[in-house]
Image (cartoon, rainbow, N blue to C red; front, top):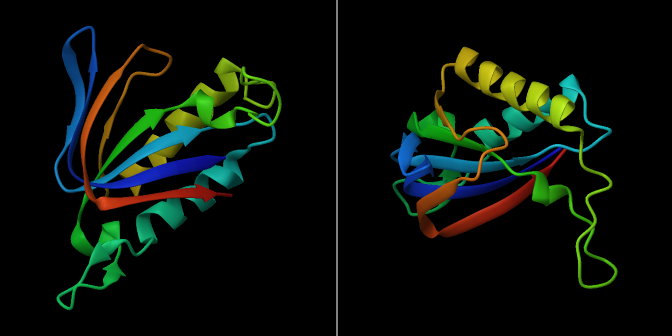
Amino acid sequence: MQGLIQRVSQAKVEVDSHVVGEIGTGILVLLGVEKNDEISHVTKLLHKISNYRIFTDADGKMNLSLKDISGQLLVVSQFTLAANTNKGMRPSFSSAATPEQAKALYELFIEQARASGIQVATGQFAADMQVTLCNDGPVTFNLYV
């Protein structure tokens, strides 16, 4: 399981020209689920994302986490993160989870994030989405568990 995270000052997701999720200061996470992922990966990745120190402190150092700043989280499913791009000119998605497995773990990630007290907005699973964001920094990390 992986999360491509971006520190944002604002972000939103639209489906069919309707906003389905929107946040202010926080993290946009593009969540990729692979075949071998399980519940323990959800818990580990959420812990890492919510405690990863990517927000600046009073001295301008990246020393604060999403939890430290009471930031918001926008979770967007992103199966293309599971792509194998090593050969040829077309990605292979053979390591991606089935839609059923991916949806279950995506929903569990959201549920656990909310239960931990984080304000969460979401995209729409398996929809054609338009994601708009203001990447603050820019700051982007790919986290794996």
